[in-house]
Image 1: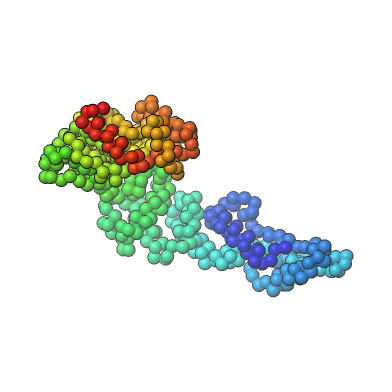
Image 2 (image 1 turned 180 degrees about the vertical axis):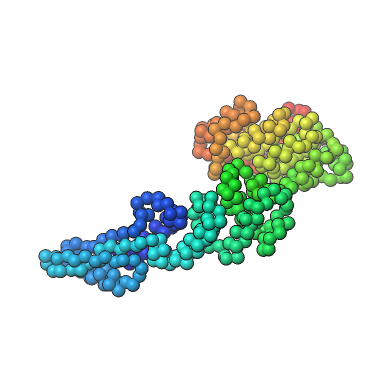
Length: 392
């Protein structure tokens, strides 16, 4: 037997699961077809005899019920208890009635109205808007109006090359835009029929990308003298490309703290914390004649970054990113939460490719990862020093 509170709990689950489909008016399964009929689980006479108080309470609860929807009753003649009028099912005609049942009426109405506003203006969004149900239902009115005006402006001005701060719209600031960049980029891509997953926000919008800073340390006093004594430098890649020096050895390390731990080394530079931003290495001419080493985590993403960096630096060698280092530090392994999707990575050596496949195929365990900073510094530094001074 379903009491009103049981039906409400059921409808809460159904509303949460189906609200996006209902907004799109594309039922995902038979449970979404209107009208929605919910059987109330009417009891048998045996249940009425065994638990008369519960059955009477159930009937009374539905007799007292004053909600939306059509409550259907049925007459039954029981052999011992006689004629009974029992609630049989509740019929709801549309999502609005479900929303009213579960105290979501205002959110549903707001989402529906905003869906209509946006699809009337940009019909292409009809297929994608339902996935942003919470945006349509919960945005403050001011934020929603800003979203509309920002999207319209971006559509009308595809290649402004303005910084976000320069956008001539009231109420739009860079922080507001940053928090909604993914949403705006996806909506804009749909309207323009672009593939959003292949482009970032600035490519999609035509706004000017803030310069990405590279951070490097000059580990040789002579190199520092050439740049006015600076040892730790953060600047856009185009500016760093103008440095007038020729380091002999360049270490590219993923972890910032690892780069900060480097001591002075003759003719050496360390570049820190690029992640997948290694594309910027291709714009640094002073790397061409240097011996370059990449040291990142031993996991699928670390090897993917290594392969990507080698597109720009064919001479790039990996450092402490091999099978022996991985197995020697088994007690330091952690889990890689989201391994790289690609089955193979280009520009890896045969041993590196074998290591990548071993990690992908869980040869040594599920999603094995050895973080760079977990390797004992003394042994790592001995390797780095030997590479620099030629004792390898």
